Image (cartoon, rainbow, N blue to C red; front, side):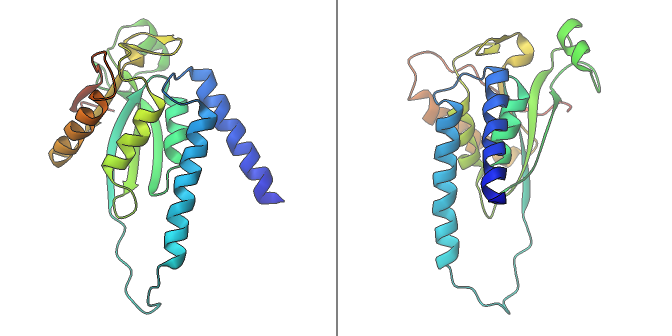
Length: 195
C-alpha cells in the first residue's frame, strides 16, 4: 500500500512539474512517464534474469555528467531523475555572463543563462545516447528560446558537455533527431561555460 501511495504522489509531482513548466514535447507527461516505466520494467526483468556470482567483485560505479537545458528546469529535473542509472540531478543556470545568478538576475538582467539540469549518471546502466533519447521525448528541439508557454532565452534548449569525448555521441543524437522534423533543430550544443 505504501509503494502505491508513493507511486501516486510521484506521478502527481511529475505531472504538476511538467504542466507548471509547460514543457511541450512530443509526449504528454503521462505518456512520457508510462514509457519510461515500461522501459525500466524491461531493465528490471533483465536484471532479475542476470545470474551473478555473489562473491564476484562488483564494478565501481562509473559516474558521468551532462547538462541539459529544455525550458523550465523543474520538469526536466523530475523526468531525468526517474531514469534508471541516473544517480543525481540538480537544477541551476548555465552558460551565462555572471557567476551564481539568482532567478531574478536571469529574468531581468539579461545574463544569458539557460535554465539547465545537471545530470550525473552511471554509464554502466544508462548511456549518454539513451539519456539524450529521453531528453528529446520531453522537449521540442525546433522551438527557439521557448518550451510551451515559457518564453525567453533562459528557456532555450541546449546540451552542454564537460567531456570532449561526449561530443560525437551528442552530434549523432542530434542527427537522429533532425531526421524526425521538417523544421530546423535549434538545440545548442556547446561546452559547459559555468553552472
